[in-house]
Image (tube, rainbow, N blue to C red; front, side, top):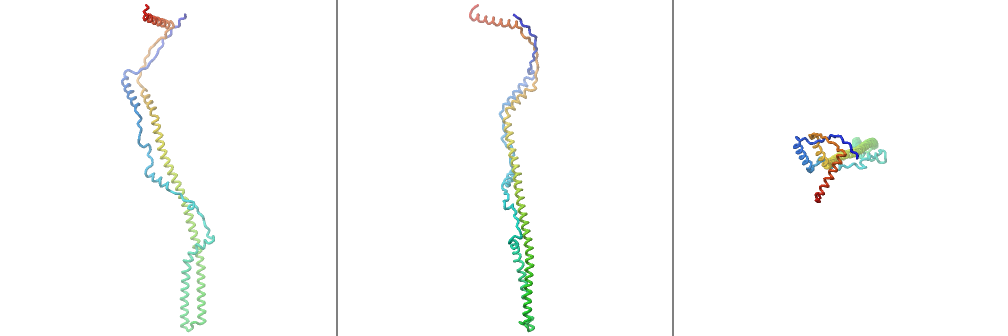
Length: 272
């Protein structure tokens, strides 16, 4: 039978709470456990400011804006020399400018004819050939004057009509440009308002997500809180030594245990 070698002595260390800090730590841990066990208290108010009243009015106004239609944003230039265009613009001017000049020339011719008749009547030659020649010459002068009025009138009418045509075309082109710019301004304002609405909505979503994460992580933070209470506690270390029992000591202890068991059984059975 081989007897095992006797083991060497070993030293062990054990840490425990310092006796002087026991009551304080016990009370602190109890309070911490009570706090960690409290239910979650959610904030029931608004998480984001949302839209203000003025913003809502502005957004409603932007939503009601309409971009110009295709007719308003399309410029279709006309030609002054196209059939009927020049006459269309000249007619109002001719009607307003030539007829008064015709009437004035006719009145002057009538006055001249009356003066001529008076002169020939006083001379005793009323109705003679010389009077007829003078009246014919007077009538020819009236016709020449009316022809001049007509020629100059048409020339002026053409110039005025062309200027009016160009003015109206410029106004139409400017109005078309303004309508196009207005449409772009409407789209730009709506896009800016949409981005602002998106930012407000995103702010509310971010606040909701943060609230959800806070409620979700509440139990885990309680565990971290309880763990933090155990950090930095005042501990003291105790050292003690022990030796590993030899094989013979273990065998002896085992035989003693068997003998004690047999004695107990014999005593129970009344065998002595």
